[in-house]
Image (cartoon, rainbow over all chains, first blue to last red; front, side, top):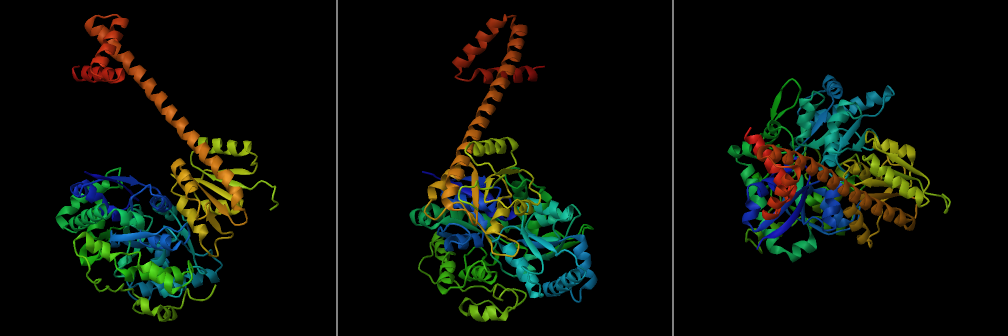
Length: 388
Length: 196
């Protein structure tokens, strides 16, 4: 007997493992009849998952934590049995902002600390000359894009709430907005950075992996009661998507994956752009300059698929840092419990084992992140901790 | 805001017909202060300029995520906004997601006052979907009629039949093969195209 599942996704390259699991028949082999439903907003994905229209979803890593804690919306316990990918974002800036940063930079342009400090000087100059503050786009309040952008600029002394404007924009609107001059830069997932470069309206300043070595990006999310009631379909889904994630890591398979994702019912953009992203070879400037990043997007490599409570704690710490919630030890614990390595391990028949050791986030600035020492972590970070 | 004054409602919808239906429904129900926004560029600044008490948005609109930003406490947000429901009201969310509409309540308006607005939006959205459905069916019926006319013409020419005889042949074939008459007619067109 097959189990029908409705799974929501947003057309982004980091939905690859989920889409490939269905297209290559891995879910079918697990006895699952998956219907993928393309959505237009993260709010829709979240709401349809929360009320049970979707059994599972491709969603921004911070959203299940926000839902479980009841931040920004109704409180619904969500769990994460598998990470769909780590990393995969980039920060893109307009030609004008890029030129302003490069004219002032003192150091390696690939070093986020050097660019962030320069951004701080550009912001100060702008303020002195009475210019409008710089505006940056990101995809959702509870998104890694929001936190990466803030982490980067704050490290250089820019207060993201006071010195610049941050606005939410749906990914497909980013490119038009930077072209039209409504925004000066953005942080978004693939393929939108590449599309801005291809259209000649933006330059990729940093890969997300420059900011953090390992950042949870999209996750597979299900309602906790659903997970409790459906352990077999859940385990099958985890295995099928993991198999697809491993498939996506094999260089010989990338052409096939790019063709699948390019279909109009999935992402509907040029297969060549998708292929470059899968390879981690991105055109970063309209003149054709290519930059390679071996850690641009991780699907299954380096244990990327395994949920890690350290990642959940880091995301919670960002919510506290940027005043989306107040710090509490109970909420920290609840956030950590949203990411479920036990469900992941159980899918492969490994039960009752202690959780694998966490791997460091590897941020370019600040102290190493330790959930047990959050107070010290916040004390070491200057921007964002002043009381509102 | 005086308790009896009509709250200001902003409708964010890229479908002008549906927005008009919604606005009419709201006005009929006594909500006189209704503004439609169909331009998504600088949506947030439009909303700030209007300063509505309630925001209604269709769920197929990607700009919905932009509104989420208004839940955040930040300098850019003037009046905090919340979803239309309280924790206990799961049925309302279900009904509104099914209908494809969502509403946001801006700080200062009592939740009880939002409920009738939302209910009205849900029923109007459902009515619109039904209309759309009927329209699609009518269109496909018209399309069928054209195809049948052309298939009849081909049969008349090839087999020397009268118009009535051609139609009877189409209908009896459809019944025998348990297919729609439009499908049989379409296969005649396809076949004649191939045999040209």
